[in-house]
Image: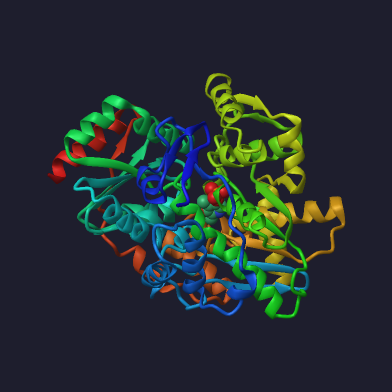
Length: 494
Ligand SMILES: *Cc1c(COP(=O)(O)O)cnc(C)c1O
């Protein structure tokens, strides 16, 4: 059986079903696989998207058969995306955009969060537990809605989402505030994403809190990318990107490509790294950040320093200073050294800073990192729109800008794929402002309409209805109130 271990303690072992249900390891580390299975790329070239996801899952999750996982993926993806191919591509010579926003909530998180509820339901069945599962989720905007959508009214599972009151776009907030379902709660918190994430992690590690929830028959889990069940489905769209370029004749089989990933919690780009470790021909991984450039500095210097100014930007899903999944990369690059990784994470907790050794730095050689400020983001939206007649959202714009920096620095002529992580309509506010078509008097739905008229793009029907939905969740709480609000929610549900 394939087992997972904690990044901080090799004695901790868990089956995939256990690791996914737990979300985070009991010592506060993240669950990881110690080895990467080999990618059967030639067998994946012609599979329907969902079947490819199921096949990839089966390489890691051997508690289920490939057939079961393919069926699970089919159920998860059926009718979730606007097309059966799930992804859509735009090609501009050697630069390609992989649009990951044609799912139910218009951001790439849908690729994993449509599957995760099915994986957790299957895991609950494997573990034969009578407990209810409670998903605690911190969100920088997109995970929250995608998780709510995925878990709404799923039998045996409840979900509570915390988002930063002043740290998400108006549309992201509205998406969460209007979520219907009998098994969920949504809270705005007075703090930023890092506050939300660290306090959720704290609840997972708080023995007293866990005893209280256990006494109520509830077991905690996570829908954040600290959950391995979030990462695995994301490998699929890198494989899909590769096979699309191959089929379009842009590359020959086994030619290496570059990937450009707008990064926050490092989950998306970690999936690219996993794909590469499995044998997908990826040359360089370009990590794009906004003004919160903690990852840029880390990849360029080996020093991770979270003790810096936090900025709220027009790419809010990347406004993060504690990038959780980096812990997994460090673990892998250190040669699966959990003592070493645990020590760095202790330094991070105590001094908000650590520096990696030569071995890890050497392992970072195929990572490139750049940052893009607010005016760079606006210019990128404008440039791509004016030069290519193509509309991108602010997160994708950050990636585009960073790709330009990469090209300038290296002159690399390989084909590159930019992971286009959200619909521009989701950030209509900032996109209108970038295109200088905004009027301060416009409200959100007017801005969406303005953007559609200006660009002659159809408004996705979802955004037209969003404004008519009733507001169901409007509570703002302090960080200290988070554990109690969870306990209240559980009691109210009983
Ligand atoms: C979550 C998100 C990101 C950052 O992804 P990570 O996996 O956290 O690095 C980038 N763009 C958008 C639109 C997102 O929702």
